[in-house]
Length: 289
Figure 1 (cartoon, rainbow, N blue to C red):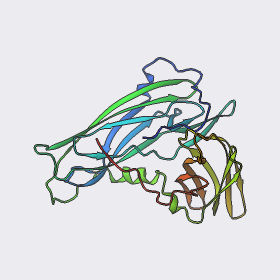
Figure 2 (figure 1 turned 90 degrees about the horizontal axis):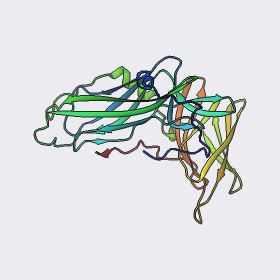
Figure 3 (figure 1 turned 135 degrees about the horizontal axis):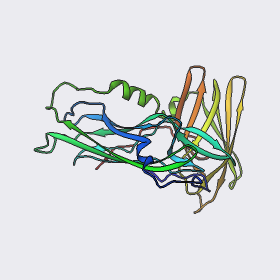
Figure 4 (figure 1 turned 180 degrees about the vertical axis):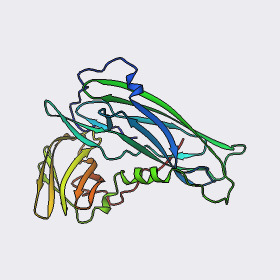
């Protein structure tokens, strides 16, 4: 997973209490969209985090305050598992204009996986485990962690698929950011100068936009202005850019939330003056464990 930090000044909440309530306020579970795995089959794993009402945890980039939520997976030899994919977050503004990116309720982090073909000799069941950590907050904050395991039988080559948890994974995938190419008609325009560039997003048919930035060592989000228009919505992201080598350009990675008449969706973006958007918009490639 890439390093996650775009905002320059990051503050921890005023009070993180040493208490095991952090472990109890969030429950972690490891699930799969298969009841059994066939050789060479692509499948998904899900880390479900259930958060007690009125509490929240933080997105993969926490914003001005908090600690990012993390999930590290262990898988059997030969299995390929990609990084956790987070659903789109919420923007929370606390006193002092402290902006954080958070999750309430229940979220599922989706990991794309693939079984080896052939399956290693003697492997009859595939065992997976996840270690997750978070900071859970309301008026007070508690650091927490949890562990979950999952064991799936290995099915014979050529056997019928064995789907599981279909509703949960359908809903989880619907909340994941979509490829930028699916946001039809959206434009990105770069303005300003080299040290203070402005990325302007215009989305036809949108009633509201929100930007959730990801990592860059050189590009800092200073602020954003949202302008609803008659038949579109515009968001101007003001950045601060510090070049580390000749030819460097600002690079803004993250997620754009789009609200339209048909509902709300999130879209992944990776843009610079030399690259208006990520044309491929592909999912992270699973890596061998």
